[in-house]
Image 1 (cartoon, rainbow, N blue to C red):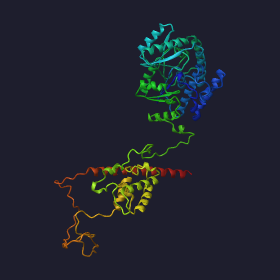
Image 2 (spheres, helix red, strand yellow):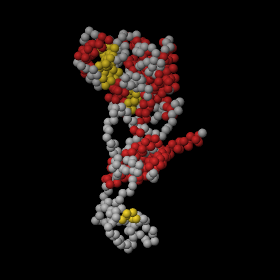
Image 3 (cartoon, rainbow, N blue to C red):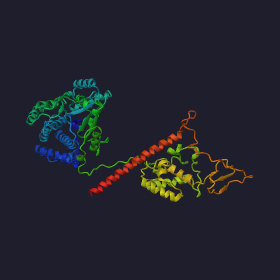
Image 4 (cartoon, rainbow, N blue to C red):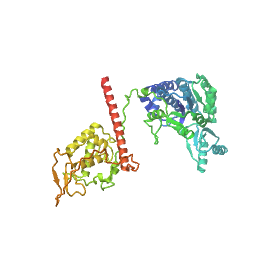
Length: 570
């Protein structure tokens, strides 16, 4: 089972729960439940308008951001549970720990929403502050804190540790601005965070006592799953009972999320809950061997990724996590479909002049098909109607495109018919039309075994349409019957090729016993036979073609069975 990690406050955005609420009813019910508690606590009725519809200001204050992020994360957790995905361990980043505690069973949704509403309001009442992400080693960060602390800008504190060279400092806005200037002078990277308070610093001290009283009113329960604390990265096992004092320390002291990631490294699969993927980036750097899956990622430009939940489900499935597919597809009429075994179509979108205007090159197996003596020269095959082999190839490609539903440009002369998606019925229809147009006999076995591409089919048509040539060196009489045929057989008419000045008597040989083969025996140790490279290549091509044909027949059988099953259901 995977680990669930919950992101912190800076990840919230308007309409971040819109797609979730529209597609998955269990998540939408959690959001409505949180909206009712928020209305009871604040008297405001725009909770769903802001997190679902995207209304209101683009930047949220702390008093709204904290319960909004909690609601989104708990709704996402409910969705994962609905899909059969349950966590083996839980952890949260800063305020994300509250959603983790809720999923662990320590807080109900009602108590968690109410507690976050009051926590956010208390922190909103503190002195304004700022937070700055610093991409430097810890020793350099300590040097920064000391330099700013000795200045007149006030104290700066280490608020969060996200990695060996990823830390967050916080304090009054003037102190944070001084830190930015100090880092800029030394050409060191930093980035301000989109928050208006200095969390995990002394600026929260004035409200900690009141928050302790608020936390004590919540009914906290023992966790029923392992929980990794952001205070020290240590695991609290199932049965651990958090208290108000823990929640106060969690708000005040440095959050060590890097320690959390080290503890979670053996789990292997981490699912981030929240908006965006800030923790996924941290996890991929800290535990590169783990699979990190954000539930609601954003695109590089900042917009939401509408396929995010589906991508997350697919990645978890590939990582070996069990998914309840029936629950995922409920309400969208999803079903299993057979996938094609042939390659996907590749279209050319070239808009300029043709890159090559010369004769087409040889493609595929035709480049090494058989001995050179068995091939007709390209574009030089003669036929009774004057068509050349190129003309025949053009017509074969046209009929292939028509029968298989392709554009002519998609029919590569060297690509197999099976690779173009042909089945046996389509091939039979195409061959019958070729036979009618060229007056040759073509069997489907010829195409499957010897002429599996448009180019080889055109060559086969050309060779069968050409007039028979005289054998080399012939100067006498050619007969349609064998010399020395049985006396009772009627001889075929003779064809005179060239007149001979003197008839040459041909003796009738004595019938000899039938010999099984004129070739030397392979068992003769004095004779060694070798296979030509072209013969091996042709054999390999035919084996591949047979495999493609077999796969296509399996697909057709699967589709036929599916249609038969549908008819029976009707």
